[in-house]
Amino acid sequence: MTHSRRSVLKRGGGLLAAGAATSLAGCSGAADQGSAGFDGGYAAFFTLNDWANEVAGDRASFESPVEVGRLGHGWTPDGNLAADVASTDAFVYLDSPEFAWAQDLAATLEADYDSVAVIDALADVEGDLLDWDHSHEGEDGHEEENHDGEENHDGDEGGQDDRQHDPHVWVDPVLAARMVETIATGLGEADPDNAEAYADNAAAYAEELDAVDSAFASIAESAERDVAVIAGHNSFQYLEARYGFRLHSPVGVSPQNEPSQSEIADTIELVNAEGIDTVLYDRFESPRLAETVVENSDATETMPVSPAGGTTEEWNEAGYGYLEQMTEVNVPAFERAFGAQ
Image (cartoon, rainbow, N blue to C red; front, side):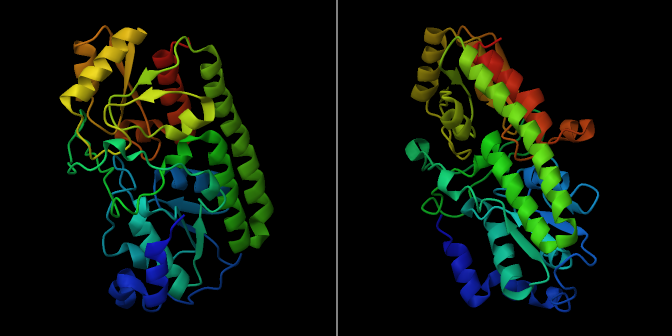
């Protein structure tokens, strides 16, 4: 990956470091990195937070600064986050320009606050990252509310030239298992006394991810059709690459784009030609485009899918983590959309 933002920040301390210098005074060197007093810390967004807590078990705890109903990329932290994170023992993040705020924070911590373990969950999967498909890119961004009134904050961070890879790597359960292992390794290095427990927890969680992998593989094997439609931006390229799924989107990978009338018409034509009954939509976006496709085609229903990068009030109250979003939301939706039931 290209880590241009972090490279600049490491050389000069960065804007975040300069702006947070006063609030972080006294935090540096507050505790030696290691087992003594290791309590946990922050993870950059919902998925990493869920994984970090699964790995930590009862040895430590993590929290995410990103509010329920919002996604971590395109999010902007308040001015207190740097001080809050620097007073803890660990920060788990993705070194991706789509999470520029987390890159900035990680660079500051690494440069000035070695009491905090900085864990890049992408470190061992960088060779597996997929390029962005820019075929639908280049239109002005927008922000809208979905049908539950939750805002879509899955916005564009960093310039388009910086967005070299699709950040939604976590939707692939195989790569997710490797990322969980990376988190366990990082926690074990920061807290050696509990390293074995972290490794064991990661291994147990990997078995559950294996079940998700098997579920998607079964869908691919029994699918009646080789294409489904998602009427929204496509966060599932990693599932397509892993299982051979083909998802058609009139939008593409960026949530900033509006489909043209011709792209919508092409999508309706595809739905009719392939006998597609169920049109998918991103739960963190408005369902209006999916409803439009259903109303003007032979399809009969819409179903939500989750990019698994955030949570909703409903899912949060139900105790849904990453696994539940994949097994209770995405697996059934993919079964219906591909005719694998």
